[in-house]
Image 1: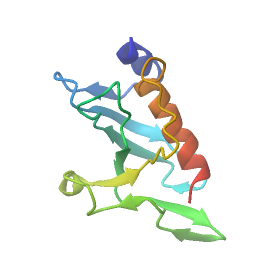
Image 2 (image 1 turned 180 degrees about the horizontal axis):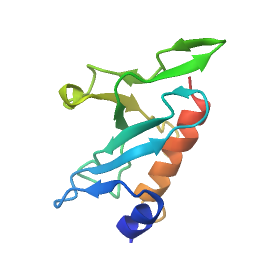
Image 3 (image 1 turned 45 degrees about the vertical axis):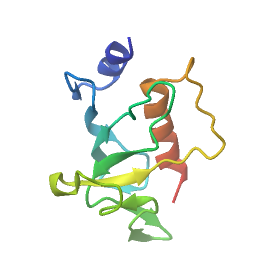
Length: 123
């Protein structure tokens, strides 16, 4: 069901046969990001769905508008926790310190919604 719902929302969605990753091509970023679209790679943890992913990978070379300038966003790392750097991705840490993930209710769908919300509000 997650796959069908995500596929309906994202035309360039690919899921590994072994479900080890989810790729969303051309993901529209919130206002202020340059460029305004990026590829997103989500690698669910081995304990998914009991545990939430703790981040995701975004296309490299993204910037945000801040105070009239373009800056590298925070929580966006090329070399930290990133086996996909050579494929053109940076790790984006999406922390959940309050442990709001509810295994019986949350899914990759709510995680993708959290990505969009977080990218719209974080530095």
